[in-house]
Image (cartoon, rainbow, N blue to C red; front, side, top):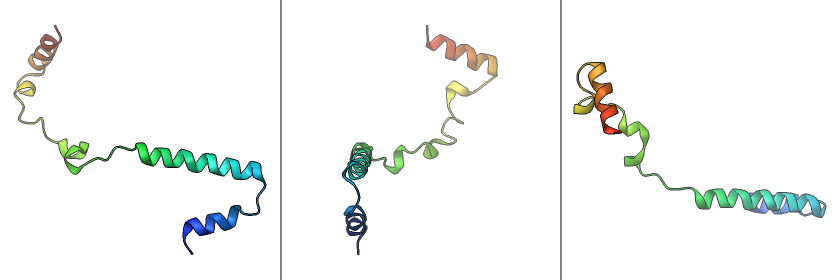
Length: 74
């Protein structure tokens, strides 16, 4: 028996207000699944670890790095 069949069997004898709550929750879950963006492996944050270690922006003394970053926002 599939999960959908088990769910149907479980709600069959419940009062209508309870079934309405279950339906509302099921629709909420369906919208979450539908609106969830698919993430490819090249977009994962884990893949960026260590990506700035050779960046020119972050080389040198910390005060110089800070000054360069401030200058970018002017």
